[in-house]
Length: 272
Image (tube, rainbow, N blue to C red; front, side, top):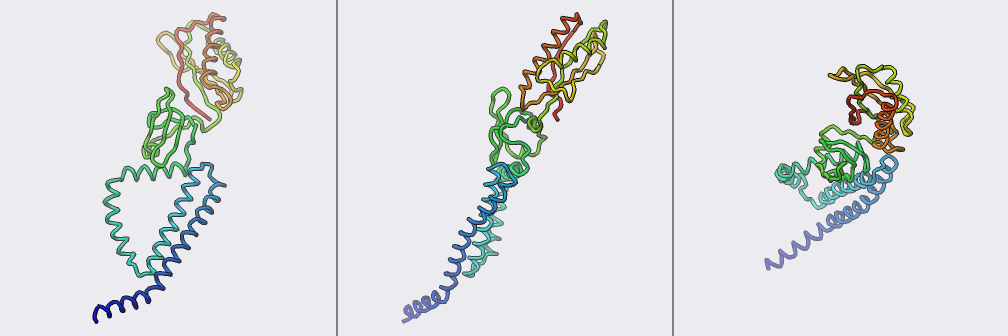
């Protein structure tokens, strides 16, 4: 008799609880459908403001999962599930797991910030953490750079974000510098005029900003001149123009019998 009563009680409780179960299932189903709409809506809004496709997808996923999590909590409350206690338990477990995986978490957050801020894009030439090269890929956890020597470097996003970033492709014009050693017996003003003519004669050197030459320092055997000129890096090969300028200065020095005790090239110093 007692087992029969217990079974009847279970049936009655189930029937009483059934509306809550149905409500929870319907709520969750609606949330799943709503999350898809929210994802597409957020991506549509982001596409008008963000060019990076991966960033747009990321925002869509975040919006979808936010709706799913909130909707799941609401659905669980329909069946009297103690969400507060469950979340508290997850908090303790999450703290333990998060402490063990803190580097992964740091790189993940840094990756999101990089995709949002976009200090560079794929194909840009950058200098990050002592490595210079073109950006090959920007992922959630790391960034891949192909160095000028052809080596592939994979940098954790936390390191990329926490270090200064030089984006050489960020602006159109780049300044180049050539150091020229001029003999002390030479006419400095005349030599500077010849060198400026040689620089401006090279096709690819910009007329504005105009090339310039300054006396930089007094050396042991020569006066050091610093020649500066600008190149549109989107239209010209930067290193080829630099090489042509050095050749042109050498040729004019030989033609005008200008003594060059030494001649060196420096790296790029500025962009604008």
